[in-house]
Length: 167
Ligand SMILES: [Fe+2]
Ligand SMILES: [Fe+2]
Image 1: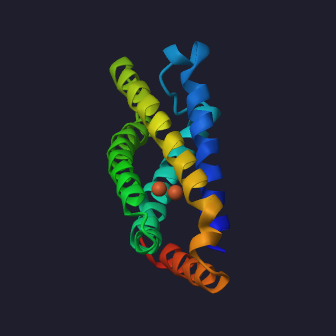
Image 2: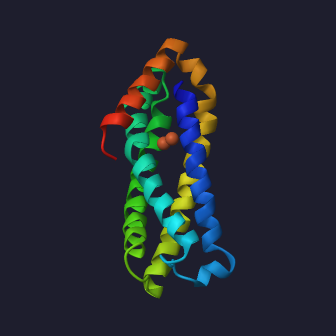
């Protein structure tokens, strides 16, 4: 069902955000990403996968399929706020994705690392707050807006988007 699919993706995203946050903290704060270090390589790959999944089809699905259903139930103000946050997150993800992609191919300069850290911090804060709002405001209450058939239909629509849409 659609609430479970979205919830699972939120959990995956939170796990990647937590890994990113840990990498920026402590002694790691002074060390630019090193593509030859396995842990950094894994982080770069999971960041790029997260951007593809989360700011690609996940956002698109919410905007094109889920939010319109909530708008019909009188929640237009909330969905407008969430869609606005998607735009902010898309821009942050595009910047961070470019830096992560470059770090995967060449040595990362101190200046690029500094930009990466500040962009990542902003993205972590914005994305965590966004997911929290969706989880508490929408996912946990989806049963109030959708019956089981609707939920199933949306899950099928989402899987179709996943199978056909480029990120
Ligand atoms: Fe969202
Ligand atoms: Fe979401």
